[in-house]
Amino acid sequence: MDQKPFTEPILQLDKVSFQYRNNYQSVDAVKEASADFYEGRMVAIIGKSGSGKSTLLSLMAGLALPTSGQVIYRGTPTDEVNLDKYRRENVTVVYQNFNLFPLMTCLENVCFPLELLGKSPKEAAVIARQEIAHVNLPETVCKRFPNMISGGEKQRVAIARALASGAKIILADEPTGNLDVANGEKIVDLLWHLAHDENYLVIVVTHDLGITKMADEVLQMTDGYLLPMDPESQLDRRSLAFF
Ligand SMILES: Nc1ncnc2c1ncn2[C@@H]1O[C@H](COP(=O)(O)OP(=O)(O)OP(=O)(O)O)[C@@H](O)[C@H]1O
Ligand SMILES: [Mg+2]
Image (cartoon, rainbow, N blue to C red):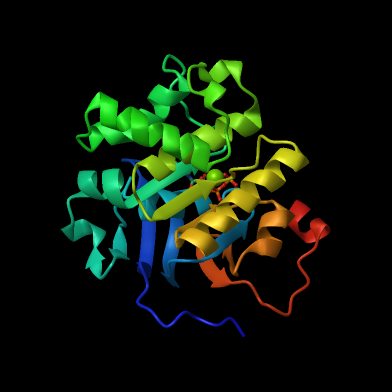
């Protein structure tokens, strides 16, 4: 059985549904998803293409509000909080394609959330350098533009930028999807340590067997429904390839 920590959840989903709609069509992308998420844990979400994983992540990120149900951050539903503040300070997203600003140096990329939080450029640069070291990147990366570093390094810069925001919730959508196995493993290792040594909540949408093996909990999305992965079920490379 999965042991839940003896603390309050930092993030909760309470019967969250989301429908994409226009005048002619609608798609029920997420259907009554409920779950509790705790700091200090790495949770993997798996599921077939189109099952609703990215939609669910964007609801948790405050990029959209549920059509019904609630996403609850430290006891307060996101429809009652200042969403801009929530997105800036409480939750951060790491993407498969890194989403770095191409015309900014790596240091400037990491400074960006700090300046949004009101730090002076000088203060931001000091903290950004610390975060770049935090993700085990050499100082030399700071002055390079994102297209002058490797994929694994780009994802580390993206994680450094996520950490600079000060948010305790890291949402990652296929963070190893564009990386080779060795670099992917290093990113998984970094995310795992952030959860277990530094008390972040890390939620990772993934097809990566390495992540599902290391995760404290695996949830599965099927046609918009979110269910715990049966701990008895044999999750192997073949079953993941099916997703
Ligand atoms: N902008 C959109 N407008 C309308 N429907 C959408 C939109 N984005 C996604 N959908 C639909 O919502 C459902 C869930 O999509 P979502 O992108 O969340 O799936 P996913 O599990 O992340 O898939 P993948 O593994 O391919 O990234 C799908 O039926 C999809 O076609
Ligand atoms: Mg997706």
